[in-house]
Amino acid sequence: MISLHGQHVLVVGGSSGIGLATAKAAVEAGAHVTIAGRSEAKLELAVQALGHGSVGKPVDAMDDASVEAFFADGKIWNHVVATTGAGGRGEISRIAMADAFAAMNGKFWTYFRVARAAKIASGGSLTLVSGALGSKPAPGAALVSAINAAIEGLTRGLAIDFAPTRVNTVSPGIIDTPLWDRMPAADKTAMYAKAAATLPARRIGQPQDVGQAILFLMTNPFATGSVLHLDGGSMLL
Image (cartoon, rainbow, N blue to C red; front, side, top):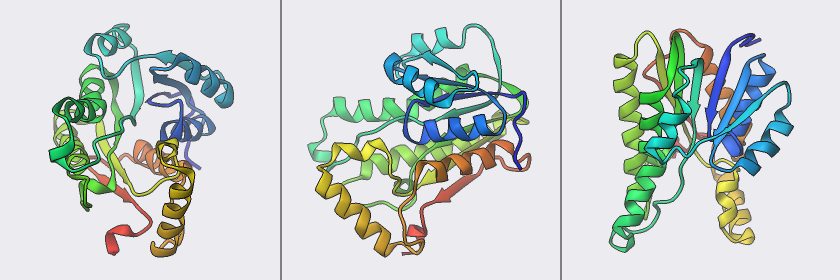
């Protein structure tokens, strides 16, 4: 059984979806968990769900000053996880430049800010979340593909620069998270059903699937510079 007893884990974007599932997995492994995000109301609800002395702290990871202020206390974390970002889909000729910059800022630059500001213990870990489009592009998702590919390149570079602190990324496929709640309910149901029927795993992913993968990368002392694909086998199709 994986143990994080006595270790301090920070999950940026930990109030919902993959981040919350990761925080739950870390709590169950005995860690002291702090979740961070922009919505204080969501953080409060998530902390209540997590229990076990978990802490929620507000931070706007898209803002330089907010990130710097968050880490200004110099606290040393054993493990830091960042899972944020959404948007960027559509044909690039129809995406306004401001929206393109916002999509890049909401994920890649968010991770970059956290990576440069967080104090992580030697031998600890930084784990990021990209997405399957970084390796397997799809129509109307060139910008998202570029963002995820950039995150995976950053991971490999930081694994060298931050050694012996380990840096890894999980690249999920279709996961049942609140991200998809923006779709009409019928469209989402149909998408999930099609994916479950097509994927070799014969199911779509759940947030806890990704949380378990992050916990593995967090605790495996030989994993660094890795991109772990967790996509139900979509790369095989």
